[in-house]
Amino acid sequence: MKTKLPARKPVAILGGVRIPFCRNNTAYSDVGNLGMSIRTLGALVEKFGLHGEKLGEVAMGAVIKHSSDWNLAREATLSSGLSPETPGITLQRACGTSLDSVITVGNKIALGQIEAGIGGGSDTTSDVPIVYGKSLRRRILKMAAARSLGQRLAAWKGFRPRELKPEFPGVAEPRTGKSMGDHCEMMAKEWGISREDQDALAYASHQHAAAAYESGFFRDLVVPFRGLDRDNILRADTTLEKLATLKPAFDKISGKGTLTAGNSTPLTDGASAALLASDDWAKAHGHEPMAYLVDSQVAAVDFVHGEGLLMAPAWAVAQLLARNGLTL
Image 1 (tube, one colour):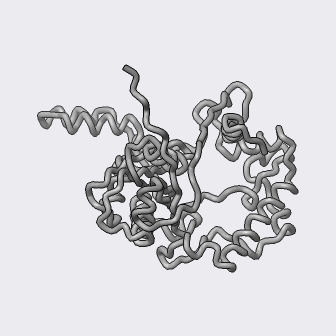
Image 2 (cartoon, rainbow, N blue to C red):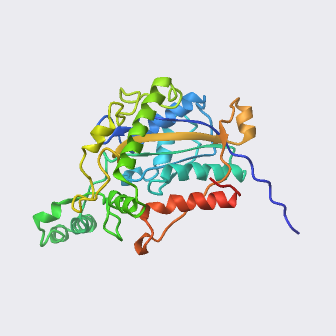
Image 3 (cartoon, one colour):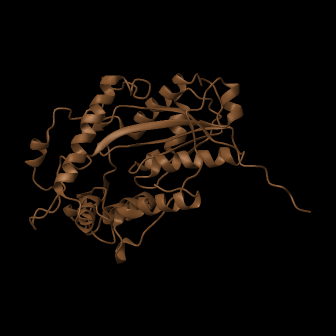
């Protein structure tokens, strides 16, 4: 006997919020991923009147987080005002973490597993996990497992002061040894993207963001936090002339470097979240959908053997369009 599967439900995007994005080691230097996530989730709960509401899922994540934040989404949920019976799951897919969190929630709604959920994420390089090297960690574990004073002392036999040197999270891709900036520089050279074009794009980005703030475009999206009501990475007073004076930030040797501190993405702290739901849930709670999540696609490339590390989104978009019979 064949069982007919239920039809896929439309996934409505009801809205979202974010805190102002800040340059690392500034306004949010002592907050961390959990604090930013709690503020963001709490603001979303307030915006949509979700106090005490039991949702089907809260999916969030962070690129770099402490081991104590092992389920960041669940901990943030418990402090957000939502029902404590709301599940939370923490995900990670590098720079696509928040987007994948939204996709995860959307897929559950589409399958009829849940009626509503929140997807989002946070990121900080101001509060990164700094750990000790393997040698010292092994000594500490041996001492913790020791059953006598002699065993505890033996764990420190041969100790060297250099073992106290801390280890910071790596910024280089393990297989190439290059940072994202290095790979982006390589991509710009391969595709012939000039310094002038990059500067022009960066300038336009700052101008458009400034205009959006002035027009009130972000009024229902960005919520105040830590005394800020707008991004502190915005440089509305920058000019093409100022950008042109900056030196290359990554390729500093060849004389052909094009990425600078002015046309590259700064290290930023922030968090965002979006509410998704089925049409029935949205109608029952009096919310009008802003848009619908219809499809999604992820891709991976063999960057070790030729393709650019940062080109996966281009492949994903092409595959998504092809599957839906669309073109750009």
